[in-house]
Image (cartoon, rainbow, N blue to C red; front, top):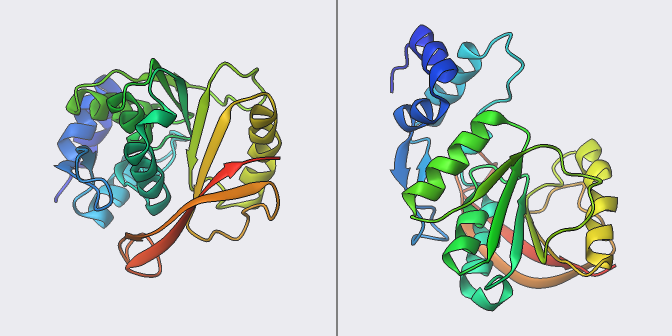
Length: 226
């Protein structure tokens, strides 16, 4: 994939959703083949071109262009247990490409929100929802600290850095204490809390050496219990 940087800048400024469709291909993650997503098909060119195009614009790298192992495992769990989300208000927190939000919508959630702080991720989520014929409301905000308004909260692979974990963990525990079902998927990150987690599922998920240090990762899905 050869990407023209000036074209990328112009398209991202004028139509972020069109930019995402242009630089990705439609594919299905290995763990949830029933869902289609706009994903990077050649990782390095997209990542470098996007970083170059956004140089000086303070926009994050395109994490939204990949379906990470944690998100895949969490999505598989949601797809296999439709009763968890059917008729419920669902939040996909730090949603990335929005795959778990799409799964909740497919399984009949009454309302699905996908929260991201990256506007390009928000555009990617909207593209992916349309691709699967479902409705997902994108929230471009850091929701940490807000009052609970959800029945189910899902978060895939969010404990990858200490500052991130310290920021989100007290709020996620608070949501659980207030009655929300809070599910997290973790592929063995160093900063996963050691207490307050109940394992509900475990599976191996195929990944890429360009994203991880191995071709598959064992991912555990937890429910926050205290």
